[in-house]
Image 1: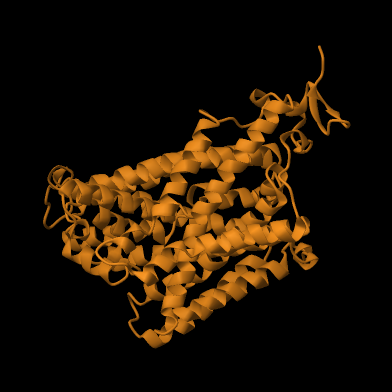
Image 2: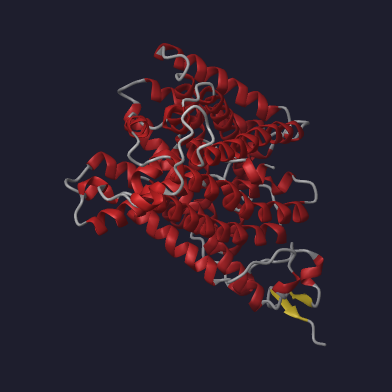
Length: 498
């Protein structure tokens, strides 16, 4: 259930409205579909290795094992930034969402404090209860999304009284793409750039989907559990994200005054949700408050998962000697309290959003976390390429692995290329009409941070890239290693002569 609904949050409920205004109904749907297929490819690349050798901290150790210690350290720092800075973003989003009912801005700090404490409690009760809490949140989100998709379909077909207006495929026929993106000409250029701008929104909607791998070290029967979990990702993406975006594009106009106004205000309130716009169009008054309540629980769930992932990432770094040993210490329930406290310290950054003077710094921090996602996905796929080459060189038959995927390593290389393009061109709007210095920094602040982490560790430790024949595959399942033996002289597995 965590794999299906764990990271469904404000990105889908609220961000899909901004995606519709950028690319139009067809442009938004195509962007989410393409990005979803590539994210599926990335997840299969990740979980082939997770099922081969599950460990605490997920994919962080894989960078060290399959590429280079400096690469593993960089992946760890990147993921700490991603999860650590996403957490305060979710807390701030909750405070903004509550303003849908309570418009007194002075109360926002109290709401942030309340949910910060609630997240702390959920993460110190132990992994058993953490799983139960996330299961409960997942059920709420899935139930609401199915209800919203059905509601949107009925509204599109004219079944909502009193208007009973049949919409059908009108918006897909009349306004499939955004013909006026940033006022650019010709129309073909406007359509393409509006469509391309949606990819960044789509990537942020899938943010955190890789976090399920972090659970592998504490899951029951992790190889089988993770195998089943990754297979649900495809149905989650096709059955939830793509269908939801399809229904939204069929039912809501990209020129809807209500939607445009909410997006202009920042797109962080329930009013910017396309499903709320549908309610307004159909004259349904109660449903928006229900949607807002579910989005709040979604944001709380995402924040909860980020605290969990950050604490386990610190454990993985400490296990490799890249962080203080205190992060390996757990209480009797198995909770790494030091890591949880570090996550709580990141959560305090959410108070920056309360001050107008500090708000720009907070926006830069949240952009840093979002772009770190793309860096993480590229790193995951590159680790898989190295892993696959090591399997081939050391004579381990990939057909014996518990999880296999199609079109590899071509899918992994496609993901690397496309995610890199999105990362490089995510800030292209800062160069249109006139250069936007603040927007440029927010769009690319991730790159120097990641480079410094990699180069600094490389210079400090003089680490070297791990040779393919020296990659340690001994922690794989027995059935995969059958027919091979470990050659100590060559430091690798070799096929046993028949």
